[in-house]
Image (cartoon, rainbow, N blue to C red):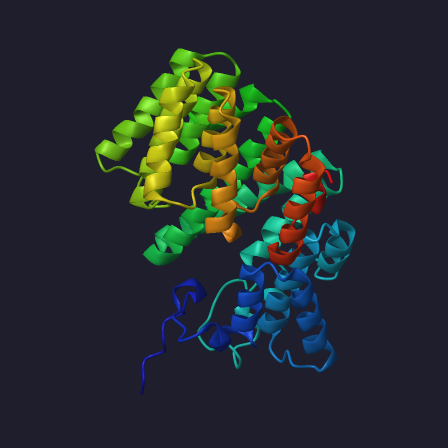
Length: 363
């Protein structure tokens, strides 16, 4: 008699392709990668109308893509209404164990993490910030409970995934508090993590950014020095969320910020150039290098930096902040800036993803 198979953790399962996980998932993912959010809505609608989704998890995955697409297209009320149909994420209807014939030996929730995240984010988008923050903190507690469960089960791959999710949600929470200029809340959150040896370089860098905003230059230098020490000692908090190139660029960008505060724009440009040399798609470095050149009254070169980035890596460089800065530079540099911005706007209309806000060109 065969011994019973151990319960399988879905996060550690290996699939040959995305389509093995859900109906035509590879196609959905390709559309999402290209920013074709309207096509995703059409594909989800078609799959539902033709009853192509046969398993419970198929429905949830398609709901996820539909809600993400609606959110990207700023249809937040529609996205919220779609989520309301799911009711309680912790319902037994969304547990693999409820369907042993479909998911033998599988355990846990089949609710995609993206749904839990958007469930927290939507109230903020709809103007109810406090409810959104409450949901984010509940989500953070949920994640930390999952980490403890996976650690007890020695499920190392799952622990890594949940740690990454914890890091992502923490950064979002801090970002929302920063947006409201609640600096003390941010400082308390980050310092508590550091005191518990949670040394993530992005979070420590964020501590430095907050210290700069409140005028604590020496504190910021100390935080940035800690990040650089982590890089030199090969430490990334035990959570390898950054590649070596991303880590080195983070250190350079931190150094550049200190130079910017001291109005040493030439040194800041050098730091950003090192970043761009390593990674031609480092949009933050590209954008900030252009701004430094503008502060140095070199409008011509600052415009070239942004134009070259849009030409070389349009999928990465095409974001509203960069385009707003480029249009501002056009307005400063050219008498016929309206015509130039219109040409840019027409190009954006051809290559931009569905969620790009074309009004940023101010045509």
